[in-house]
Length: 285
Image (tube, rainbow, N blue to C red; front, top):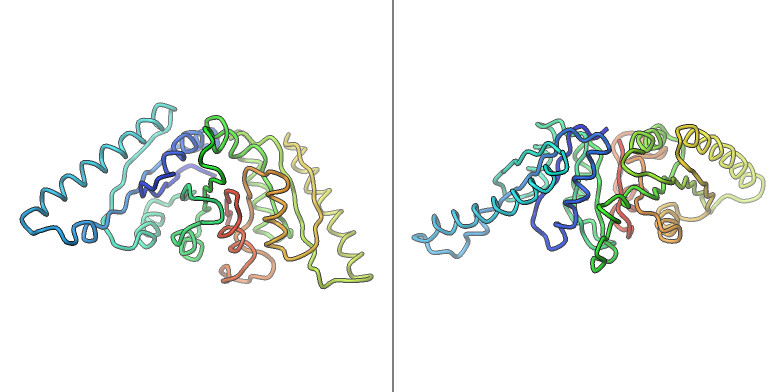
């Protein structure tokens, strides 16, 4: 699943927290990690006198090179094959999308960012690329290990919402492939729409319970502990609330559901969860 991973480097304050997590992806089958940095030199040099621009440009490039090489060495020391890719542009997500296509990346990683804040790049990528997208979020950056020891905690307790659409079922299969990354338990969640009542609600609950049991059996057969939750309410809010209540380390879900026939629509459940949940989110196509 994760043969080639692209990590978008922007040197935000929380980004160094991601380095151990990137190194950890080797356990999930990552053969190559591409550290992509998109530089907007025109903006950086705005207001700099013409005679000084070449010197300032050189200093900026050297500073970027030093920091990104540190990250590359940290990941390389863990046995990950790392490559650095520089691009110049003024809109990060467009250059990132192009790199994903050219590199044929199997996973794109963004963040970390504060909880409930996925950033504009995540929004545009969800609508622009067909590669799985991992959005790292940090609820409490003051913790010494926000994602767990050496990021093993990122995959330890994974919540998977499901409506048994093709994309949702692929998320379950991907989770099985990621068990070597440290998955200890999977929480399967299905949310029943609140407008059902009477016989219709009872039938929906019975059918969902049977399907949840079947999915749990498949995961347990693969050697992964699994529990199930049957909830009612607004799907996106119920999923986010369940992730908080169950202390999930990661929400892993299909990028589309039964209500989407082609591309993921604005306002869909997966988009809402990815942009607003307080937990890291892995969207699977």
